[in-house]
Amino acid sequence: MMRELVSLEEALEIILAHVSPVGEENIDLSVALGRVLSENVFAPFSLPPFHRSPLDGYAVRAEDIAEASPNEPAELLVMQEIPAGSYSEIEVTRNQAAKILTGAPIPPGADVVIRFEDVRKAGARIKVFRPLPAYTNYCFAGEDISRGERVLSAGVRLGPAAVGILAGLGIRDLPVYRAPRIAVLSTGDELIDITGALGMGKIYNSNLYTLAALIQEAGAQPADEGTVPDRAELITRKIDQALKGADMVLTTGGVSVGDYDAVEDALGQLGAEILFWRVNIRPGTPVICAVKDGKVILSLSGNPAAALITYHLLARPAIAKLQGLSDWKPLKTIAILQDGYPKASGQRRFLRGQAYLENGVLKVKLTGLQSPGIMKSMVNCNALVDVPANSRGLKAGEHVTVFAGHAAIP
Ligand code: AMP
Ligand code: MG
Image 1 (cartoon, rainbow, N blue to C red):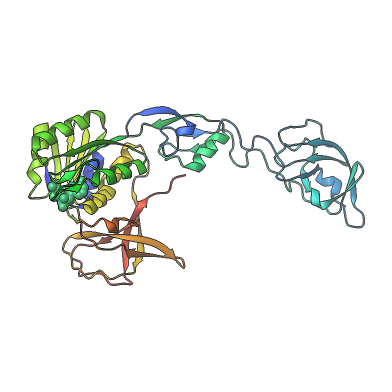
Image 2 (cartoon, rainbow, N blue to C red):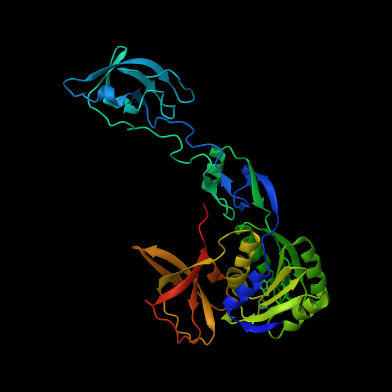
């Protein structure tokens, strides 16, 4: 049943109830950045794989240098040399040493490594002037990752560090969720494609680019379905076509009260079920959410800032769930507002802001004019200030809730 003027939280709940992770595929590590693991990854072996030296020096037995002092240094015979990349099975025995380079396996028998700088060479021998406790300068096999350990969990988005760890474990073939395809189309008789010439009364379709970029940034795959005039049958055809190859469809424009009919009619002709119309926030109140063939169609206001804000608040979490991300919730935190915002507001409102840390305190300043048609204040916006309903305006210095992107990725 269609609901009207739902809260942001209700809207999100309804949308999320209708999306689930897309299918899985296996990909090569070299193209894995930004993808989401569909299975847990376990270490096939330990890292480091062997006990190794963290520095250039001599591998010795702690007990042989236990009595060493500047006046009575211990003298050890250097029996072997172990460069990085090689190894030795020759045991270090009483009063012996092995020259060892950074990253090389510590030979059997030795339990401590003395830095080059801390010994004096005397022919084939070294002099050691002070004792060191056993396992000093000694990296244990598995101290980083132990064999069988779960190194990464299903549902995490792979960042550079995760990619590096997988390489360190020799894992090239990765089970990931397919990158969801998100179709984007814009409706509006006034819209001209960027390749066309701008006539009087026309504007370029910028939403298509903003949304495609946001989708790419999210790690999903945008499918550009272009610009459609405000005519229900044309919109129907476009959405129908878009649904075929996509996991979700975003549209902009044609959902405000005056325009509502075009997209509503189109969704009706398509046989889509409308779940809600309008969300109780500004900007971006006129959102239609519908489903067809198990896929969500989210129709956002054409106002550029409204489209951007409702994308972040509604579409982005849905994309995250499609992607298989275990954590799709936006980061919500408290910041200190630097500017006043005197405008009273009956509806809950989101302001474009830039959050930053200063002397350990999170602050947020507004990025400029806040009307829904203003694009300039979208630039540098990394946080949305949540102004509660029935606000009588905000004063500089107030604590405000901000929505700031998504959880960090490994
Ligand atoms: P609408 O949601 O169709 O009522 O449009 C609201 C405002 O946003 C109007 O000023 C439109 O010209 C503008 N607009 C609609 N679609 C786009 C778009 N794709 N790119 C830039 N501006 C748009
Ligand atoms: Mg319009």
